[in-house]
Length: 583
Image (cartoon, rainbow, N blue to C red):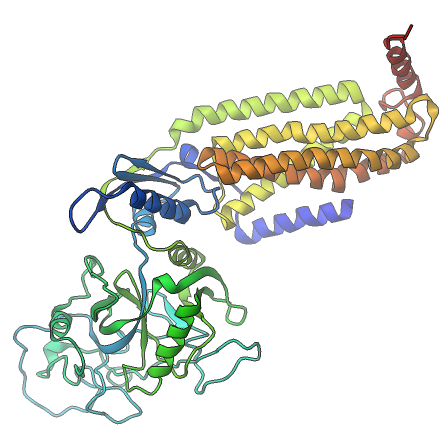
C-alpha cells in the first residue's frame, strides 16, 4: 500500500512536471478577471420574456462553468445578464458567452476570394494567360469546365486539413486518402481529399485583381443561386474584422458568408442539417495524428439528413461537392466529400489547441442562445479584494492544523506522529490534485474552495482518531498484542470510517448539484477532500501503523509510545470508577 501511495504521488508529480504546472489557478476573488454585461435584443424591440432570459442564463452558465468548479458566475440583473469569469481577458469572455452557436451544414454553391468585387474593374493590356495564373480559375482534374467554380489562391483557399484559423472537418470527413474505405468498427469513414489549388503555379503570387483585366468572379457558376444572394456575395468584404457580425443565418434561405479566417467567401445552399440535430459534442485527442479534435454526434433525424446530403454532393463538380459547416453565419470548414457518411458521427479537426477545441465543443454541446445579445459594458475585475480574506483563511487553517497536531502529540504521543504524517500526506495529495485539476479541468481556487479544504483537516483527523481508539480498546487489559490489535482494530474501524466518509460525500454531491457558484465550489472541495481522506487512511495510515507496530518502541509499549500498558490500564480503571452502579 505504501508503494502504491508513493507511485501515485510520483505520477502526480510527473504530470505537474510535464505540464509545467506547479501553482494552482485562482478564482475571481483572488486572481481577478472580466465582468461582461449582456443586454438582450429582440426582433420586435420588446422586452424579452423571463423564460428566454432564464434559458440564456442556464446556457451561458454551462458554457463558462459547466463543471461548477471554475468559479465563474452568471446572474440576471433586471433584463441584463452579468457574467464574471476569473483569469480571462475581454475578448476571450465575449467570444465564449456572446455567440449563439447556431450550427448549420450547407452545400457550397460558389467560392471566391475574400475581397469585394470593385464597381469598375481595372483594365490592362490583354494577354492570354493560362488558367490559374491570374484570377481564380476553375478547379478540377486538370482541365477547366464551364460549370466549375473559381477558387481563391492557395493562400486564400480553405483546405480540409485546416485553415489558418485552424478548423476543418477531418477523419470522418476529410482524411486525405485517395479513395473511400470502410471502417472495421462499423462506423462510417467517408473521406475527403484536399481540393487542388486554383492558384498560380508554385512560387507565383496569389490572385491580385488589380493586375488583371478579368472579372474576379469569372467562371463562377451562379446556376440556382438567388439573385439577391448573388449580389450580396459580390459586395461581401471578408477582409474586415467584423465580417461575421450581423449575418442573419436563416436555415431556410441561401446564404453568402465569410470563412472564419477571412480568406474566402461562399455562397451556400439552404441548411441540410440544423444545429438542433446535434446531440452532443466533445473535445479530445486523435489517437492516430495526436491533434486536438471535436467530435459531433447527431440525433436520429440529423444522422439521416447528414447521410443524405453527403451522398448527394459526392458526384457534384467543384466546389459543389463541398459541405460547409457554418457557425453563427461564419464558415469554419468546407471540405470536399467523396462518399456518403452514415452513422451520425463527424469530427472537426484542424490546428486546434486544447483550449479552442474545448471552447468549440462547449458552444456546440450547450446549444444556441434563445436571444441575441449586445455588450452593454465590459470591465476588468481586480483580485485584490480577496487578498485579506485569503490571508485570514490561511491563518485560520494554519491555527487549526497546529492545534490538531499539538493535541495528537499530547494525547497519542508516539502514535501522534502517524497522525501528523497522515495530515502531511493528505496535504501533498490535495495540493497535487488542485494543481492538476486547475490545468486540465479549469478548477480555480476561490475562498469557498479554501474553506472546503480547511474543513478537510477535521475529516482526516476524525478518521485516524477512530482507528487509534479501536486499536487501544483491543490492547487494554492486555487482551491482544499490538500487532494483532492493529489488524483487528482495522477491520472494525474501516467500516466506521467508510460510513462517515460516505455520509459526508453524499452531502457534498447533493449540495454540488443543487447549488451554483461559491456554494457548489465549497461542495466540490469538500467531496474532493473526502475521497483524499479515504485514500490516505487506506494507503498510508493503516499500513504505516502496521509497519511501526514491528518496532520495539511500540511493540514493547514504551511510555512515550501512547499505547503503554500502564497508561491504558489507568484509563480503563478510571472509566470503570465513573460508571454508575445499579442498585
